[in-house]
Structures are given as structure tokens and as C-alpha cells.
Amino acid sequence: MPEAPDLINLGFLSDSERELILEVLRRDEELRMVEDKRVRKLKSELLEIKRKGAKRGGGSYSERSCGRCQEPLSRLPVFSNQCKICSHYVCRNCQSVLPNGSWLCNVCVKETRRKTLENYSSSQTRASAQTEKSAC
Image (cartoon, rainbow, N blue to C red; front, side):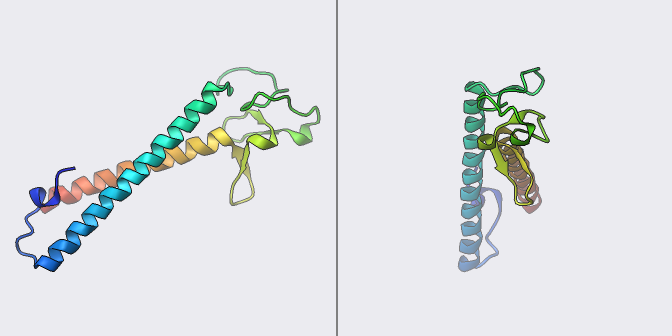
């Protein structure tokens, strides 16, 4: 990102006001980098899970093995549950409980977080571009 003084004429502001604005812009850039790092980390975790043999969404697989870790599931349906997003049966070790008490499989939770972070990041980028455009 180019330095803010190259984009915005801050000449009419006092030195302290200019410093405050530049500090906010620096902090914004730091936060964006942190969010980008979180998205990259989630993507690498998802790739690792898929590499280890997690079942894919469209395939037909045995309902007797976990859709994520491939471990055998209990013969009793009480102990193996189906994810509400991907519909795979997963063992308890591969479930993530949500704040509302429901659960999803680990892959769907990570995928949902990744999409949320990417959407947030892209909306922040668009808003920042609009702000920079209107300031010129």
C-alpha cells in the first residue's frame, strides 16, 4: 500500500492531527496483515485436512467411517452424527461445538471461518479504496 501522504493532501491539518491520521492508517495496515495471515493459516489447515484423506463433499462414501479422520464409527447411530453442512458422518473428535450448542465438522467450521474472514477483508479493502478515492 502506498504511503498515505502520497494519496491524501494533509497540508491543511496540524502536525498532531496528521500524526493521528497516519497512526490510524498504519494500524489499519497492520490489522489487514494479521487478517490475511489468519486466512492463509485457515487455508493451509484445510489443505492439510484434505491431504490426510477427508471425504469430499460430492462423493459417496461408507457411513461406517468418519468423514474427516477416516476412523471407524460406532455401529450405534447415537455415537456418530451427520454434519449439517457437508452431510458427512463424523466422530466426536472431528466435531466442533458452536456457541449456540449445535456442532459442525472441523472442516466446515474452518471453511466457514475462512469465508467470513475473506468477505470481511474484501469489504474492508473496498471501503478503504472508496475512502482513498473520495479523499483525492
